[in-house]
Image 1 (cartoon, rainbow, N blue to C red):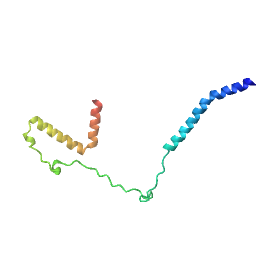
Image 2 (cartoon, rainbow, N blue to C red; image 1 turned 90 degrees about the vertical axis):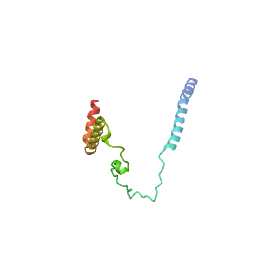
Image 3 (cartoon, rainbow, N blue to C red; image 1 turned 90 degrees about the horizontal axis):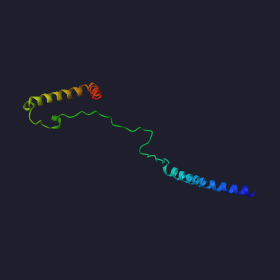
Image 4 (cartoon, rainbow, N blue to C red; image 1 turned 60 degrees about the vertical axis):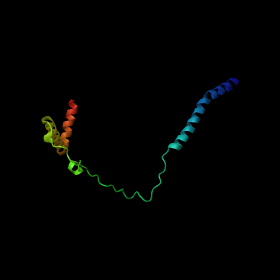
Length: 116
């Protein structure tokens, strides 16, 4: 009989740390659930949910020109060297093309990046 009681006591003492860890886990879980559960949101009566919110439509904006911004160009392109005039005209052509054909410009850039 003594052997059975002694083995039972040893079993209890060997399982006691696991039992205490389980109790600590339950306490931690309770406090974590209590602290991090979703808070109840109080409904503001000024904005009932039955009416959808009114949004202003999104308007696409374009870049303003120098004339619209009131900026005067300094000098004239004819005063530039021939290489700079060519570079300036090429930039102007590219800007005009990209503003009129944005999809095609995007495809050209994608191909250029893929090859690069």
